[in-house]
Amino acid sequence: RDEQGCIIGVVGIGQDITARLAQENEYTKLIDTANAPIFGVDTQGKVNVWNQCAMQLVGYSSEDVMGKHLVQEFITDEYKAAVQSVLDQALCGEETANFEFPLITKGGVRLYVLLNATTRRNDRGNIIGMVGIGQDITGRLAQEREYSRLINTANAPIFGVDTQGRVNVWNQCAMRLVGYSADEVMGCSLVQEFITDDFKIAVQTVLDRALRGEETENFDFPLITKGGSRIEILLNATTRRDEQGNIIGVVGIGQDITARLAQERGYSKLIDSANAPIFGVDTQGRVNVWNQCAMRLVGYTIDEVMGKNLVQEFVTKEYRAAVRAVLHKALRGKETANFEFPLMTKSGFRIEVLLNATTRRGEQGN
Image (cartoon, rainbow, N blue to C red; front, side, top):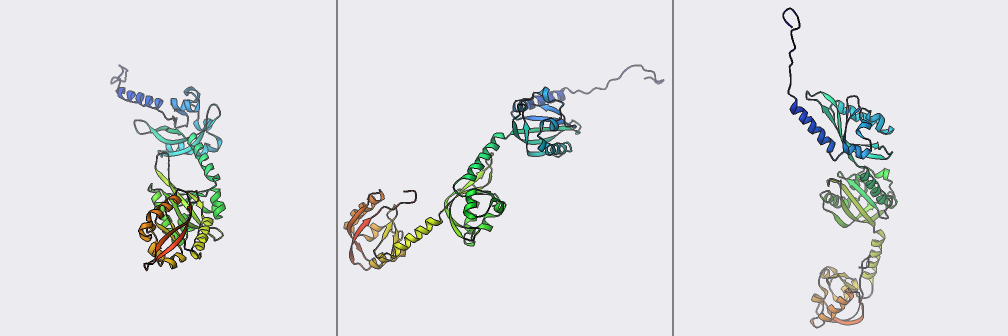
């Protein structure tokens, strides 16, 4: 206008938005071609971003969803309030990571999505909506449920702890064996509440090692049942990791060896008190059984013979090869009856022994 207020023309104040539009176009292209489902809503909760992966996953095209209210039209009733709360937080500038919720596909299938909800702002910093980057975890959850079912129905006691040592896995077999239900143990410290004082440090060490990625096999320790009985468990402690490989706890697969140990103690007692000399060697020929009668006969105590090579240290030279052959046969499963050989007593006397060499096997038959 001129000084009298008459219109004399137009003045335009411009802004070069070429770069900004190029940037927005690139941003839109990246979102649309991303290999993760990405959607966005405006401040009213209406869909304004819907990429190709979201379309492939849920089955709705952009035209089907654009301008529709995300929560009201695509979220199951039981999750409407929770999802709306996440959107409202993002629209207030509070972002949410790893929020899990279900989506119903166009074909009526229920999918589970893990969502990171990010606040969306314009170039002046004003909040204009929310962008959600999702991950389809339907398959993973199904796998986890199957894993949980297998654990829960396994015929071995299986328990797990988190990184703080608190129980988060307790299967039915563990429940039957120890007497505590899952509700009674979940969240409790395994070591502090269920391990006898004399084994607390040892069991904690095994758990700590597994939490560092060092697994332990065939660790023997006692558990106290709800009824107060002591049972012996043989444990394999395995590191538990999430899908990114991060350590999230320990799973222990156990075996109740209470009866076996009682049987072995009875076996050891019978051997030790037998009125015949009985000795045993391991697969390396080292003494690991030496009963009282053998001790009285030969004069060596258990401490003096345990771990020593029977043939090299207690058999006369001329019989070493023959005795070694008998032991090797027994270690291959071929037993020998009525084999006669001499032993040297501690005091230097030579005594003649008639031997039955019997193969000794573990519970798996090895």
